[in-house]
Length: 391
Image (cartoon, rainbow, N blue to C red; front, side, top):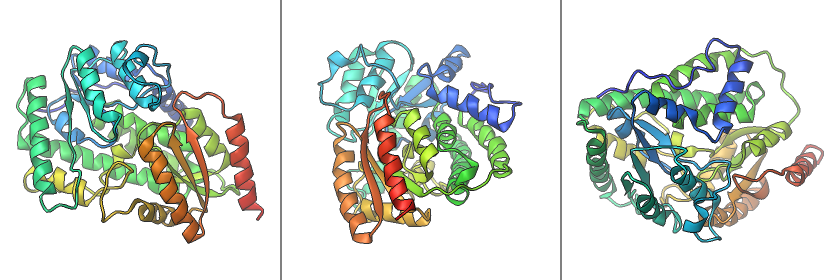
């Protein structure tokens, strides 16, 4: 099965780089998710998947659109009654998208990444007229049986998706999808190479928008966008400014407001981050030889990034963060966490101790996806930056 030849995002085409990036930002900032509706209007089906990582190739191989459910900058008026008060915002706004029919799907897949998210699929399933599933990634990726287990779990999800799509997903379909996503991963790595080497060529919010679109449009279309815009970015005539280089850590699940990313980009160069890390979680190409589901499973275990919700003894998160900082030649780190995010807030403590031991400067903060005032935070960040510049 191949993906429908449907284009969902044409606004950027045939425009200058600046105007194309404006269109990218506007589409990502909008809580309407118009690209998903355009896909459905053309007769396509949608599978929504929650943070952090999901093997989107399986959905793509069924000819459906994998949609990254990442919350929205909105008040969760309908979802508030389904959750307790002291929970992160992303759970509520994501459910609100479904309760309000703002985003319509044929299937929703959640992952038990924390105590709160563990209940999301059940609540979603009771309130939506389409199936809701849980994908159980290995709790112990260091186990010798983790790849076998995950291959079987991916096969279970494949059968669920086949039933929803009404098509058979063959190994040839999966291999074709892996090729498409491998190109996408390479292009994403190219984009982040620009952020690390020449961050003055791409604003933080523009890079974020270009990545976020991957979860909103067909991957072939996203590949075309990246293939077109990345060379234009590299050819930009922009001058380097005297700014400190920072790594942003804390955007693995709930996303900071777009204006917060924009504010950080005005103040310093964000040379690496974990924003929407699930869309770029596999750090190398997935091999195209052999059984595709097994190759996807091995890639998750052996060739992947890190996050506070994956517990791999071979990838201590504080050491991985330090590697990220050094690889990006960063001067400091911004350690952020979403309010009420237990995994994120716990890792902040570990990160601060590790960075203290290494003598790396850092700024600690919290955010919420629908926060709208940044004056005080911007002043604090500016003070932090000035202390580093003039120390």
